[in-house]
Image 1: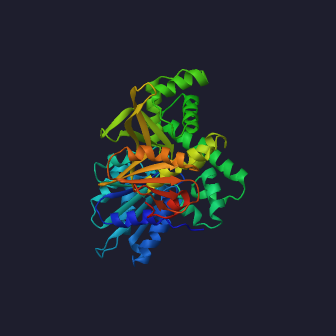
Image 2 (image 1 turned 90 degrees about the horizontal axis):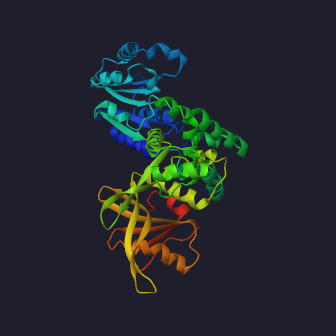
Image 3 (image 1 turned 60 degrees about the vertical axis):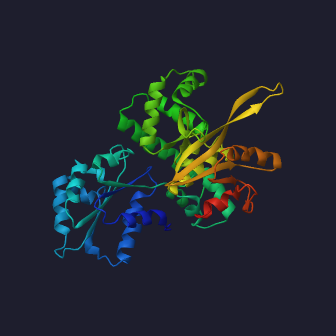
Length: 415
């Protein structure tokens, strides 16, 4: 089964011939190799690029072991270049297996006949800051697990697909397993034997149990405002374990480097500034999050929020959590500040949209409650409520759009 990943192919196409190394990054098993060596390769041949102008090397293949030597690799690529002066497309998978691979790639960039694309994994290539190694000459293309629309494209009933997706996530290999037991085992093994191991090895960590506990705490509280101090207190009171806030801050950074989680900062909408006291964390794949918790705590409301966050990031938006301050008056006519939250403040260039994620909105009172923070922004940016119910899209007299979750996820132009 081949699932097209058009949004990433479009990014690769847009980056062709830009003089930079195209670096496909993302969480392990999200399909980086397949994107480059199957989908992008097919695009090149469809455009009339001859196979002898596509230099494709899987460096984890035993047959290519000698090419892990940097000089041997450079010599081999040079030998494959045709004397016609035309562009050649170099695709290197698992490039981290090459010693001094950054120097190798920088050397390849100096040949104007070569357009270079790479992917990699394990502790040597996972870091989100890998692009900085290329001194401004790397173009990162961030690959996420399957979106719901990509997952649903594999076939089946829409609502059954949604149930599977919010339970087991969007890592492509999940689609190969039919039983719930096999899906659960795949995710559990992937987390323990790959993700956790990579983070420990890359950062030379000794307190593996502490890291595992931290990840479990984050998984239990997706979408909840927190900070290292609060997490440290949770360790002490709930886990009866002492872990300093500084250590937790480092561990959170390692988890983000490995693309396992992402951080959403809190933004004061009226004050137009970031609030550094608390942030929210979301998992790159909700199936991995479920495996961490042994499929407990499957609250659809929080999972829905995580999936909306990931979808917005896939669509190229920066995503923050909005705070709007207003005033409330008590029975004794005393006024007090009341902070209201907007689930997502998203930006792309000059565009800004406010979005609320609401699992159910059965009454007018609940609807008014969800609209309150949106209306208190006192600006003209678009405002949207995404509801878990399968409802028909509508716009009220104040311009607030309400759409159903599946409509949002399946329609790339829904917002």
